[in-house]
Structure formats: C-alpha cells, structure tokens
Amino acid sequence: MTNPTMPELTLWLAFRGNELLVNSDNLSFPRCAELIELDLVAQESHRLVHDDGGNVVVVRLADTAQAPEGYHFQSLRALLTQINQAHFSLAGTAAQILEWSRNHRFCSRCGTATVPHAQGERALVCPSCHFSQYPRINPCVIVAITKDDSILLARALRFNRPMYSLLAGFVEAGETLEQAVAREVAEESGIQVKNIRYYASQSWPFPNNLMLAFSAEWASGDIVIQEDELLDAQFFRFDQLPEIPPSGSIAHQLIQATVSELSKKYAHPR
Image 1 (tube, rainbow, N blue to C red):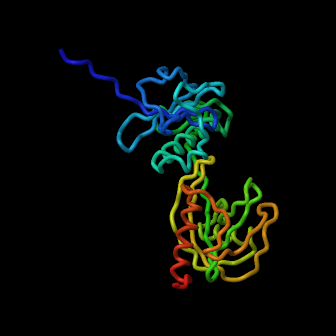
Image 2: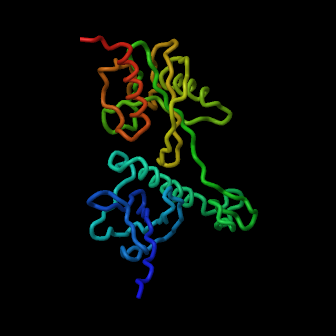
Image 3: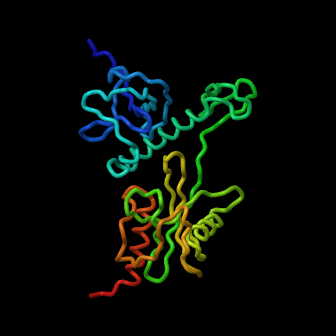
C-alpha cells in the first residue's frame, strides 16, 4: 500500500501592518500547507510566482494577530540586513502588493469598489467604468558625486541617527533620469555635476520605489544645502567617511563601489 501524496507546502508571507512573520531561530518565512496550521486567519491574500516554482502566498493579518510559538513579527526594514537579498526581494514584492491593494479598494475615477481582474491579471478593476488599476512604482534617482579624492554625503533631517547618505529624489513628470539627477543635486546641494553614469537599480519597498543609482562628478558650485531636507552635506575623503547606510541598500553598495575606485586612484602605497 502506497502512502497518500503529501500536500504541497506553501511559503507564507504574512504581514501584520508593516511587520512580517518570521521564524525566531533563523528568520525564515513559515512554510506549511494551510495558514490555519499557524492559528492565523488571512484578511486578504495574493499569490506570487517564485523562482523555484513553489507556492507563495502573501496575506494580510489583523492588527491584533499574535505570532505562533517559535515565530515573531519583525519590520521589513529591520530585515534588510538580516536576510539574504533573494528573500528580502520576495518580501519586498509582497509588501508592495499589499500596499497597492490597500490603496486601490475603490476606483480613482468614479469611487466604485474595485474587484479582481477577471482573467487573473495583477489588477483591480472598476465594475462600473471598467478602469483598471495596476501596481505602480515610483522611480527615484540616487547619486554618488565625487570631487578629487572625496565623495559627497548628506545627513537628512529624517535620519534619527548621525548617518550620512547619498543625494536622492523622485523623478518628476517629463524628466529623463539624467535630468532628475542634475535637478535633485542642484536643489539639495547647490552644485552642478557632469559625467552622469548609470550604476545599478534596486527595488525599495518603502513603500513602492525603484532606486536608480548613478555616479557623477562635481562640475561647479559651492555646497548650499536645502535646509528643509538636509542638516548637513559635505565632501568626505574616501578613507574618512562618517556612518553610512547599512549593507543591503543600494546606497551602501554605491558608496562602497565609489570608495573602492577612489582608493585605487588616490591611496598612497606605504
């Protein structure tokens, strides 16, 4: 007699507000056949496509949901430096889908309650005027600006610690990415840049941004900070940096790549 086929296990990305349910031992996501096995009930659910073809379900839990034994809820931002990039990307996608769903329960044209797309597309459709609302991302530029052996870093008003990062901002309607870089830099620091070059990108689920990273060189001007955005901005020599953003962020990656290039050019052999 053969054993009955075991049900396929599902990877659950279960959010309580902005916090994600993770295993307390290794920060992995729960995997089981049904969410009820964890004594949890979903208020809303969405399926995701995983690279390995396995089942992945995103769920929104009640704000009063309690973590089952062996698990706890942790903020997505805190997980950035604690889980691998593939898992963070999956969790970030899940968070953005829930954010989109929460913000589009009603049609933005006529106010009618939306329904899921009939053919299963990732869209919410108005049954009255048939307007479809798909998940949207906000493109943002972030730039590492060099001047001789130094890199421009700024401390934002929103930072709750003495951390410095790169200048960044949203792309505005009608702009190219290069125009957005030049404008943001001029607005926030007062300087002009040249030789703008694309570096890399990163999905940034806070709440639904796409970070597009660039490098550039100082061209002219003195630093005059935008005081409603920044506390300070200055050029730091590559080997004398202040506290910078944590690993896992494209800001950290770009700063380290820039410092590596500057050190090759300006470091003196002992």
